[in-house]
Image: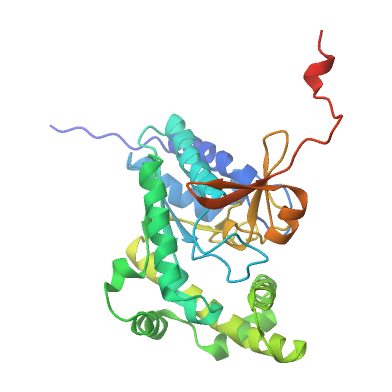
Length: 324
């Protein structure tokens, strides 16, 4: 007779909580309050499903869309050191999970540039080039825990406008419903304001008044959120069991876990809206290109601008100088 044993729920919970503990130091939150794994019930349940099945934990991360079109913020339209460091961080996080849960983990980067490229005023060929370079970086760096997924994987070679319309029509919330949510839900209002600010900052060559630009960007911000929600729904259909990550700040206990890829003064800063600056102690910070180039020298890699390095001030001694 075949004997079966009930799953060890305590062991499953212990391992799931330990995996979440690895994520907590990188939580991108809207409130800054410290939290324990028990506060993240959505994520614990999803992780436990993979642990119980002895399978790799799958994370989905919408993001890495394309570079900002504002040259004062970024070094160009292709990935640079900010993306390299972010990919390295995500792959290392999966390696750390593997030490706790031997089947390991995998992050599906769901590149969303084409979803709203027309709204953020970035050419589709730049978005393709950015995603292709990301795939090359993942492959060449040996980041075996990462993969990239974009609209081309869903709808092939259809025209970009057709793809956008397809996703919007099938998955996006109505504008009326979204406006009501912005009025009544604080996190959605914060998201709307943050995206509006990015759109204002990223708009180059606008010939109208500042107030006219802000009105246009507020309108476009609703469209970006609609398309982002639509993309999230499509991802959920493709990966229904996955743990949902977000590059946007998220409150504790939300269905999505906001994750900070690199250090930055602003919780909304991402590698695709900034440049990387290497400090004399070897740490990295993200900031607008215009600020980074005032603080450091530009470094090229493979013939392209990569990042900035801040020189150690003249006369500054390292702590090693004082060791005997």
